[in-house]
Image 1: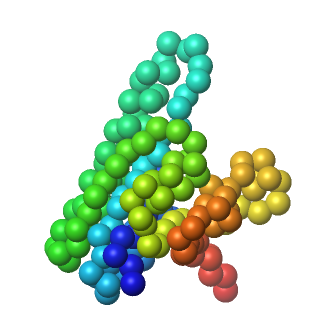
Image 2: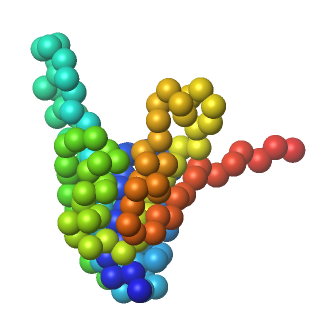
Length: 144
């Protein structure tokens, strides 16, 4: 059913929760997990731009290596990729190019002005993906 599961990550804690779900699904169905980190290009004339981009690439390699390390003891095959571009576009393109059966991704749960100002990568992927998309939110804080 789910031969290939894509889990886009961004180094955040909630993305780690999406990885947990993707690995559980892969263990159940014998799937290959595709870890994808999209580095957004930095357009600036600032001389420090190269260092910022390299720091993002380094974070991408670390996050993807973590997926592989977590999958290895469970016998789950992992393919990792770093791409540069607009996140939702690169996620959708990767899914089409690799015949992805399921996308498992985090959503930061922003609402109102913050969501309108920042946009939502997850929302765009949900709307435009040919494959089903499972979204994983940050756990709600418990009160009382």
